[in-house]
Image (cartoon, rainbow, N blue to C red; front, side, top):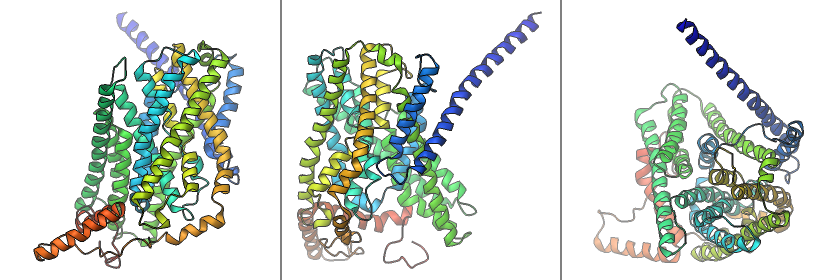
Length: 548
């Protein structure tokens, strides 16, 4: 009898589990179908650059959310409940890894200084302005209840940019410098925002003073440095394994699988040790693209023809880009549906005018925060590149485009807001509900309104006739001194006086053109020491040889 009861209990548990699984399968199936609809409609609207995939996904989500809200009698507008773990563990890694793997490394590292200025220093400035502004203005609007830590978190949430709209209307061939800066800042900005957000989460202070600010800054430096080193280490270890063990002697599938798994492993290790997985997987992607992938294609030459190698490269890059695209579309589709979550809006106890004041205040602070660093940091960058000619100068029109490109907020802002103000997508606190709705409004307004205006603005500031004049320096920098890449910085085979003379020349060049000189030193070090160990693209001198 007891056995029968146990079997009955087990059968009931299995049945309930199957019912629960089936109840999850239905919304997931519908959501995947909506993703397919987004892809089809996005393809049909390709002729309209002002209507990008982000806006399309939001509008489709808004329409579907309206239908669900009406059919559920104003109870819910979503098919799925957002989980920050879902975003940070499954959706974010392919987005960032693809950004690192696809980055044009020559342009990225040649413009590394201004990119880091905008992406790191800019985030610190913007976060300070947004956090201080909200701390000062929110109580005046009648909105209270936030702590110092939450104000700082708000600063990081609204300092994360989404540059997809601008990148879709820029031409990498016509404006290589501008495209590199906008793309580079967008990636580094997201990583820096997440790192700073994690640093802010570690403090527990009622007042913000110099000691608290110093702690946040030191935690930020620690997270940024260790996360970067972990990503670089993952990329170099992968390259060394592929080059030394010759994994792909029969097929490149194992090599590609190893690259993807090590990248994801580095991300999870960073999260395990409470570092920044987003920064780690980005630099892992950069290093793998620079070293590991060339080991894959080189070993594949034994069993495949060159044309087949190019096809494999192209398909792999498209695979990474596809995963990234699906993850981003997922986020914007969800935001469009979640914007109509009636319960969340009803939970906020503030009046409509107070809410409008909060939305307007945050949007104004975002605008001011961008102005506060884009134009001053552009002056610093131009000064550091003062001998580089027009090809390295950030013109006033370029500065306007960079400022505009960073006004839109996207997936990372949504994920950080849900992580701060909800628990598994649910919030029962009116103050937290207000911040969630504020984030959704800012993302919707900035993406749709600014996204629609991006194409006309870029066409006005950078017409094709004028932008074509900037393409003359895409292959080289006429202001750059000629250098011998085989010439060492110092040599034990030469006399002390010759080494001293060369050191003085290097120091003089460093003072005159610091950014170019540091980049030149790295290229020479990379060619002499890194590529022989980890592999990489052939240099100009031995490009025609059979091996690199």
